[in-house]
Image 1 (tube, rainbow, N blue to C red):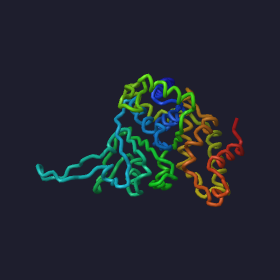
Image 2: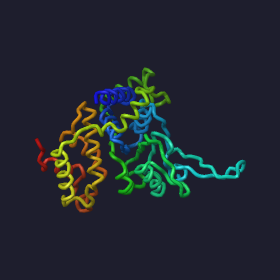
Image 3: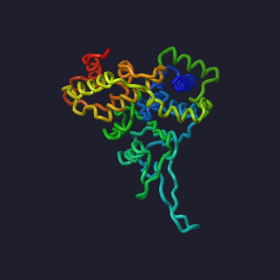
Image 4: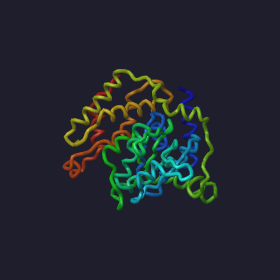
Length: 316
């Protein structure tokens, strides 16, 4: 437990040296990785989404591949394709960038749903099917996708089935004034890492530790009363008159694993209601769909989740 906690915070401290004022986003990304999930990073261009993904992979020493999602990107450009080799007279597989450990799907909502769907099987089953044949992906395969706000021109909103495959959604915004001043100071000194060069931190942990971190949350104990609290939160959200699409069982499992990962980051070997509350926003905000009437009235997903935490009694 202590090894997991210390290793995770060592990686987070290294990320702090490249991004300023984004510790919370980095911790959510780390917790998602420790829970075995995939992460969607949401934000306008230029706030450091790509840098966070690249720095995270670099500090863990994992193989990294980036795909720039564009309107003309085809599924085979991501997964790979069989080509005929004239020298052997046989087809051979040319593997796509998906055959890596950390795959960054950059601006995933700028490509049509057909190509977005190429990731569905990979994210759920960690395999891809090419010409009817299944190909296993790396055991550490992780998707870190970025997207621009859906109001931006030229974007395709991710369907609910795709969103549900992401364990969490991270919101990134401009840094706080003091953090932005620190970034500018380092840029003026010529010591700013990552933003304008390919210089990234060296691996901070051993490969075995990076592998062990991927499933660190499973070691966290969860008492029945905390599990019942989680279920009551889900039931309350489902029954809300503002909600059209509620939390699925997969969403409940996602909240459990994220809560356990946050407990691990805190150095505890047991889950608490506070861990559930901390994981609630990044884990459930992208899974809820409000009724059109509620949206017109100004109701937000966050307000629905906040109301649930205020209504459901916390176990002691």
